[in-house]
Image (cartoon, rainbow, N blue to C red):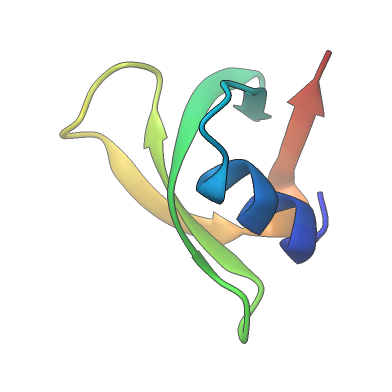
Length: 60
């Protein structure tokens, strides 16, 4: 995924299916300058990590 798309998803009121290595994630923050995103893994608010947006996939 490109940084710009990750930012669009983060700012949208709509829900999008985003995955990290096959696991559903919610984008919690996007660092456009560094191409990184903080994501919540599945529905566990205690399971967050910061990853390169290149590792994120948007599913239809």
